[in-house]
Image 1 (tube, rainbow, N blue to C red):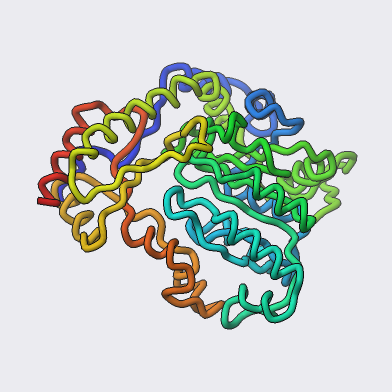
Image 2 (cartoon, rainbow, N blue to C red; image 1 turned 180 degrees about the horizontal axis):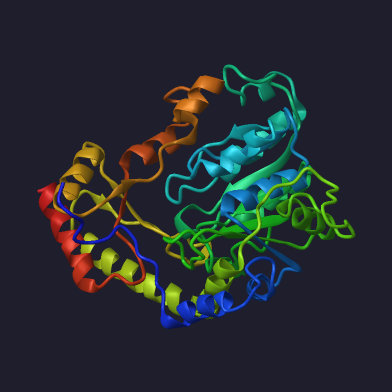
Length: 392
C-alpha cells in the first residue's frame, strides 16, 4: 500500500486551542473545573436547552441517556441498524432489547413509517409484536420505552413525525446527534427536539475534544441523575467517597473541555469550511458516472458535514474501488457495516442477510472519501481524479 497522500481526516486546530490547553496545564485544576463549566455553557447557548452535561465520549452520553430512560433487562428501544455500533451497544449494556427498523434509502435515517408500525405492533402485542424480534436471544415480548434516532452523517432524522409516534405510545426520544452538531431540521438545531440528545467530538467530528461528548436535555431529574452517574454515582449532597448510585467514570477532563470550548467559538467557521469541501466534491463527482453524491433532504435546513459518503451504482464493486484508491495513497472507508450483521449480533440474536434490506444495500454501496475542513481543493481534485480513473 502507498503511504497516504491525502489524510482520511484531520482536525482543525489553531493556536487559540493550543493556548487554552496550555493555560489549563498552568493550573492545578485538571478535572471538573471552570473549563467543563464553560464548555457546557456553550452547548446550553447553542441548543437553548436547560442542561448540558459533558462526558468522556458520545458512547458514554448515550449510555447515560439509556440509564435515565430506565432501560433494564428486556425493555425495548426502537432504533436502526444503519449506525455506528455504539447506538445499539448502549442498550445492550443494560440488557435492554434493541428493536431495529429499516432506514430511508436517501438519508440513511430512521424510516418513520417503519418506526410507527413497530411502535403500534409492540404496544399492541401478540403475533404482530413477535415479528419485530430476532430469531433468538429474547423473550419476544416487551413494551417499548424509547425511540433512539440517529442523525446519519450530519443529517438530522425526520423528528416531527417520530415525536408524534412517541407521544401516541408514551415513548421517550433520544437523539443520537453525535454526527450532526450544527445541523438543523426544519429550522431547529439538531439535538433540540427529543427528550435527550448527545453530541460527540472524536477528531474527525465538526469540533473535537480529542475524545468527549455532551448530553443536552430539559429534564431536571434526568440531568441530576446523569451528572451523578458520570462521576461514579456521587449525587448532589453526597459526602467525599459517598455514592448514591452505581455510576461510572464518564467525566470529561479540563484539557479536553478547554479544547472544545474554544472550538465552539469557531463553530460557524468550522461548519462553513466543511461545507466548502463538500461543495467541491459535489461539483467534481457529479461528472463521474456510477457515483451518487450525498443527497440533502428538504427537511434539512442545514447540513452539517461529518463525513463525505458516496454510493456506487449496482454492479460496481465498492471494496475493489476502495482497495484501488488505497494503493494510490488515498484512504477510503465503508460506511456503515450494518449493526445487525456484526458478528456478535449474529451470534447473540441470529440476524441474517435480508433482515433489513435497505440498510444492507447502503452498507454494500457506500464509501467515505477523505474529508475534513482543512482539505484543499487540490486534495479534493486528487481524490476525484483517482476515483474517476478507477471507475473507467
